[in-house]
Length: 148
Length: 148
DNA sequence: CTATTAGACGATAAGTATTATCGTCCGTCA
DNA sequence: TGACGGACGATAATACTTATCGTCTAATAG
Ligand SMILES: [Mn+2]
Ligand SMILES: [Mn+2]
Ligand SMILES: [Zn+2]
Ligand SMILES: [Zn+2]
Image (cartoon, rainbow over all chains, first blue to last red; front, top):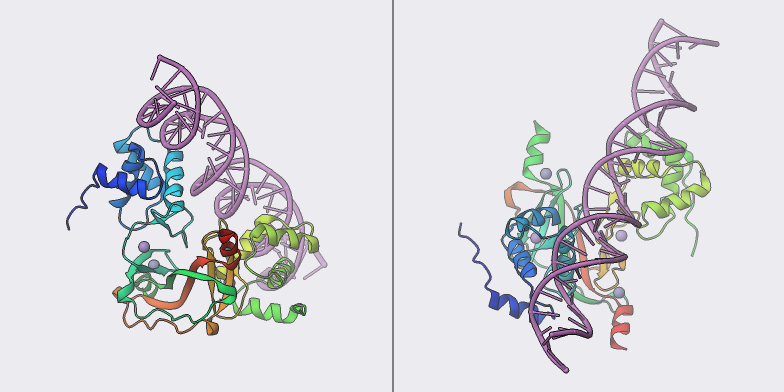
C-alpha cells in the first residue's frame, strides 16, 4: 500500500493545455483529490475532501469542473446504477461487477475478464469508441446474508 | 407496423400472482401502457399516457408500482445514462448503443451482437445474473453533423 | 350481512441531487 | 493601468424521487 504521489503543477498544466482548459488552483486540487480517491466517489464525497484543502471551495465548482473534465475527455463518466454523478478514476481499461442487492460496484480489470465481444457490423454506421460492461449479480456479502 | 395487443385481465392476474402482487386496475393499466411504449420511457412520459386512461392516477403511484415491478422481477431497471428512472420494456435479451454526443440509446439484440464474454472465475464468488453491455460511441446522425 | 384489517391509492409535503444565475474577483494582455 | 474574459462562490431554482397521511376497497372473520 503506497500513497499515490501528488501530481505536480507542471504536469497538471500540460494536462489542461492538452484539453483546452485553464489550469486554476481549484481545478488542480480537485483533480488531485479525485486521483487519490479509490472507487467511484460521489460529488459530495469529493467536495468534503476538497474542502480540507480549499475551505472556500463551492459544491457548484465541484460539479462544474467534473462536468468540464468529462466534456473535455480528461475523465470518463460512469453513472450507472448510482443515484448520482460518478466518474471513473481507475485508469486501466476495466469493467464493473454490480450487486443488484446492495448496489455495490467493484472494478474488474479488462484482462481478468475474458474476451471482448467481436462486433462485426453496427446498425446504421455507429462508430464504436469502447465497451462498458456491467456484470449484474449478487456479491459475496449479500449471498452470505441471504443464506443465513 | 402492427399494434401490440392489449394484455387481457386473466394473464395480468396470473403475472401478478406469479410475483406475489395484488392485481389492481391501476397496475394493469400501468403495465399495459408501459408495454406499448417503445424505448425507455421516463416515469413522467408513462404518467402522461396513463392519465388518459385513468385521469385520477397519481405520479406517486406510477413510481411506487414501477419500483414494485422491478423489485418483484416483473421488469428490469436500466437507469444508465438517463437522469431518471428507466425500465426495460424490450423483452428480448439485448444491449445498448449509447451515443456519447447526443446520449441517444438504441437497443441492439443480443443475437446481432456477437459472442458474450466468457468469464472464467469471479473475484470472491460473485454470482452472475446477466451482462449489461453498453457500446459507447458516436451515432450516425452525430457523425454526419460533425463532418459537415 | 357487518366489522375488521391489510394493502393500495391520491394528494401533497419533503428531500436529494443538480443546475442556473449573478455579482465579484483575478490574471492576461493591450 | 485598464479592459476583458473566464472562473469562482453564494444561493435560488429546478428536476426527480420519496415519505407521509388520510381515505378507500376488497377480502376475511365473526
Ligand atoms: Mn471503475
Ligand atoms: Mn433496451
Ligand atoms: Zn451486495
Ligand atoms: Zn448522437
